[in-house]
Length: 447
Image (cartoon, rainbow, N blue to C red):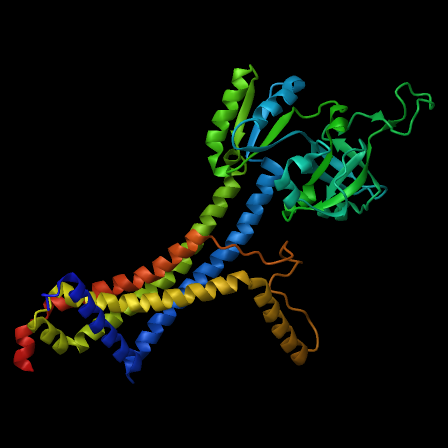
């Protein structure tokens, strides 16, 4: 047996392991049931964990990308003054790995609807008129539902869909913008020629709603608005100039910050450069913790299945103790026999993990259609039983989503596959430890 070398031993171990698995699959007793339960347990664990994490990734990455692309950018540069903002923007734009640089100001205010008395606290961000052309990431995330992203008109304002609904305003209607200290400083109305007796023209603090957007993030759709930078500069107390920077890889932000600081310092520009990691740190930390605990909770399935495989393999060792004694008597070593049972676990884990992974990928990529079919079936049953009512897995009245997001991360899919596969292999290996207590001479004596 040993004369064939490692290749011969491996072939022999594989042959015996396959024979044991085939016997378990086709036997009429409990070994057959335990085999299929083990395979199904691994498959269900891999399937559940992969699909759950895919949906969680869809929600979390949607939130994170909305925050980074619309609000915080990858890197923020706060300048001491607006005098050299354009020069700083050009210098940063020439830095390696920088994709876009958008100058902006930010105001805190209250938006009041026309005639209704409704009002909404809002973050008002002043952007250049061509912001969406400069920042393609923002253009992808900011969906203009009505109107257009038109900030060329100094009186234009863009509202989030939820803010517009709460204020009761539509396209073309006028809203009033107030600061926390009171109404914002008035500026001359565009239609006034100074004929009304006021030296500076008609005083006007109103804005015309030129667009209504939706970001997919409720906080932005309710509490954000955009105006042009020209209008913001006319207001006293306008926020200091900031530069929002997008880089090719947001996880390379530390390298990007070092390059930006170097470029600015070489030209004597003082600025405070901060990373996206410094903004919404608590929110990102909560999402990471939530995902970790979900992974642990669902991963308990593998522990339960691993114990079941362990017990099944131990029972198999006891059932085959006479055969094991014979194998030992003809020259098989302890390690060889243990490998037979570990290989049995490998076959169980391989079949289960591969089946679960394939099903999980198919479900995760078509989860919206799957939930659509589920809702159709449930609503059909409800219609038959009660004649009314409407069921939705993710009701828009409760969840702020239009479609169920799903995003598979290849590294996570591979990790889950290896986790399910490895748990079966380890269970088989540890269960085979009992082989060491089987004495060939005793087995042959009693047989």
